[in-house]
Image 1 (tube, rainbow, N blue to C red):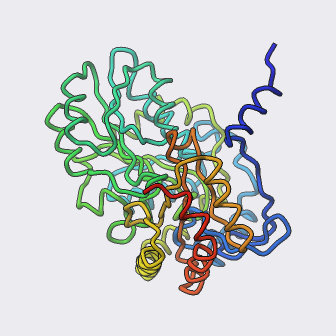
Image 2 (cartoon, helix red, strand yellow):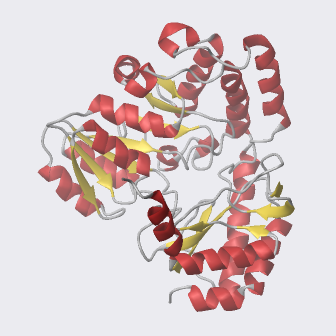
Length: 390
């Protein structure tokens, strides 16, 4: 008999049980959550597009044309002109011949890795890769080799051990640390060992590189460096879904071989139309990325003045390491009492002893919002000073 009561009690005692807050307003810095007005620093809406009026207008107009649901999978009769137009826009945006839509980033990773690898093949991963990539490797049946975070020499050693078809997979921007993978060196290592590099750029698309084209563009890398690019649409682009971009053969192969594409109802066409509008805004409005960088600098300078050491990051993800899970929860609760929402991230999302406050910034934030966050951090200075590791 499975005793869920005991399991829940153990999770609560370890500070690992999660709970949901009830949001009563649109995405944005100022929200009504659990009945109170809160300044939120926890969204992945990095460019502030999730509540943009042009995006919302596209969604409404497309709903009138296509309805609220697609009705079936892409390969039956769910692939509309709206989906196709978005795939073409994503291919142009990423500078690749083709792109393929998936319902979520999780499903894009599961489907792509599972289609490319099987028993006798090898998947090589950064130890801090997203859970979807870890699960993708397990489900693929391929041999999994992991390397120390962002350690190119360790990745190269694992490449030398690999057999069969080999895929080296890394996050572009690591979601809990905010740092950027050493993509140029990883690309060279993969080529030297006749392996493909796949980049999960969920947190880089829209934020990094010219026109927000992501981590690969940030380094000036292209299709020959990383044949497989995955990006999500529910973060900086502000809507929902995901895509994989690559050459003609990759996309044609995934259409017929990626199980999470074959056996899933297509996203609503209205979401695809709204996403195309958001993608256009993301690519042409550089001021959003410039404002983000100014906010990042303001936060980091202010935290340093308070004696708080944020983890190294040049992206909107700005973590403050606490260590103990219960203590991280206490710090988050203290900020909540000051009207600021910063989530405590705990195992298993991060390793034991690595619990943290994960501060995320958006182009929708104002300088005054960052100042208010710094004031809240200063007001809880005693708690943070007692908890932050030296």
